[in-house]
Length: 389
Ligand code: ADP
Ligand code: MG
Image (cartoon, rainbow, N blue to C red; front, side):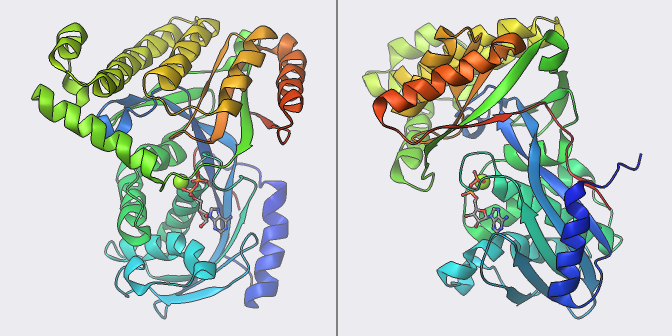
């Protein structure tokens, strides 16, 4: 089914013509995502449940047959021209003002092995960068779709997600899991995507807050995250250490939580295991509730996830705690921090009729503490990556 072009795509095509002196051959869009539940489970081979946001990255593009990718972004100052058959971008040590281009150029270099070639690409986005909403995967996936279509290469979406992940791992040097790219490419409106991070298999789960008289709010807490910082790596290392002490491949394999906790002497490792094991169960419980048509009950799962991330995994931050607290006080069914932690966004599930009070309550809580005001995005589960023009 052909979708009507987003209003943005006309303006983007014009900007493309100005920048490159010819019309683009098409415009592609890939959304950001939010993970409903299942945090810090991905690298423990566990379960996650993301859905696509109504915001993302658009790419206007035209094919080039000289093996060159030429990329510009309306959100970045520098234009970058690179060969698709170079080595890895990371090893070329680009200066800071060109680093952003490692994402699209990296995708072009990885996809080249599958038959794509060069292109001129103009990027535009309505997704905040570094807010934990996965602008990086949206950029990769929009670029990947554009390159495949322009060069007539057909790659199934699960495989394309793996290739985009590989681009981020190898070309950008960010050891991310498969969730962001899978969500951006595979999500559908009115559904969340349960992804098993061990097998890579995913299933669609009904998730339509509006149909239950609810809204899902994404709250940018305005405290910026630094995922490459040491804390994230330390959590991963703790999980690996606990798994090895327990004699399992990954914490996903812990079947008897009581026995596992009794076997670990280090209280820090016990807390980490407690979070990961119970969080996987919460994903399964959330999926059960959604399949049963009990969407508002998901709020309790979100609250439990938040407390576990705050107290057991110890990755929450003051703005996220205040967001969940203020939201629930104002009548939300629940909420939690999302992403790796130490900054970024939170989500809140609230009855539509209470949405205004919930927002006001959160804003007032920030104002009382003298924090930068939060930003809200109402986020109906939206369509995955697609061609818009
Ligand atoms: P997140 O994916 O949560 O937004 P990341 O740190 O993984 O955060 O990715 C953000 C990076 O992706 C930015 O620093 C930039 O390099 C790149 N990026 C994302 N969107 C754009 C854009 N519209 N233009 C240029 N670069 C972008
Ligand atoms: Mg990212």
